Amino acid sequence: MALGLYTVLIPSPAFAVGTRLAKPVSPWHVHSRQGLGAEGSLRAGVAGGNSARASSFVTTMPKIRTSRVKTPPEVYRDIEENVQVADTTFVANTARRADHTHVLLVTTGSVASIKAPLIVRELLSYAKVLVEVVASKPSLEFFKKEEIQAAGARVWTDEDEWTGDFNIGDPILHIELRRWADVVLVAPCSANTLAKIAHGLCDNLVTSLMRALSPATPTYIFPAMNTLMFEHPLTEQHLRTLREVIGYNVVGPIGKKLACGDVGVGAMTEWKEIVHIVVDRFHLAQAPSSFDQP
Ligand SMILES: Cc1cc2nc3c(=O)[nH]c(=O)nc-3n(C[C@H](O)[C@H](O)[C@H](O)COP(=O)(O)O)c2cc1C
Image 1 (cartoon, rainbow, N blue to C red):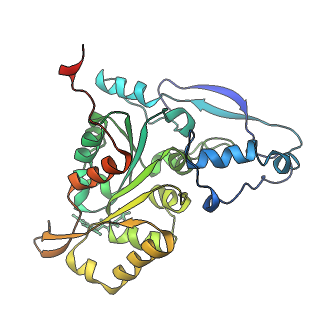
Image 2 (image 1 turned 90 degrees about the vertical axis):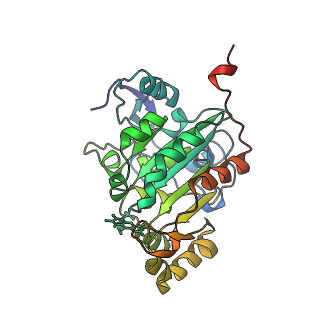
Image 3 (image 1 turned 180 degrees about the vertical axis):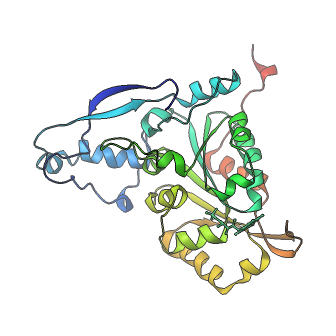
């Protein structure tokens, strides 16, 4: 299926054979993102700090298949050289790079998804930033995967989660993506995805990822919808749940003439403002332009 993949055999500490899975500490109590990302700490807990508890479940260490994937720099080089970019298996530890900020952009079925390539391109104009995009199916009506790839990132969809050949031990995409992310931007967040997140539904890659997120991962929600959708009493309730129960940062929407022709509140926060939130929070510096290179 994927280009340039090969397979290796490694033991995985996360799986117990013959009995049951060793249960690590709750992700809601993990607050360190150093090195491996929030979930990396969790895994380290199973292999390291919790090893006594974990090992009591393990009778034989299984050989588990995982795949060597292209690192983001390799993928970006492929893009630059116009090589076809494969939707390969994604493994957080391989895809993360030291001293980089890992931005996960989630797009949903609002017209404002048209801004996704601009957000990606602008973020990648900063030094030591990597971006991955998770797109709901409707959001792909508003931009093309190729636009994101041309900007220097990859797009992950439900088809990448459900490839039809899953084996125990294979990386699970929505988990790997959340392990990878230093910050998550849901931009735009449709009324539908907002409602699903507020109620804990997780029936696609976007909402499975959101449901699996660690509270240690800063998460920003940028609602975008028609004014009457926004003024619907349920919207207020859902946004309150996201702010007060889940602890997300909700930014916007703003008022302006919407794509549907209505004038009122419901538009996504300006895309440059979204980028600035990340720039400010992670103190990003502009990458040197090619003119600055020796
Ligand atoms: C042209 C078009 C524009 C739409 N714009 C929005 C929008 O701005 N906000 C919104 O909440 N829903 C909008 N919708 C409806 C969503 O796309 C629809 O509810 C979809 O199921 C959302 O799925 P998702 O949340 O999984 O992306 C739009 C639909 C169409 C056909």
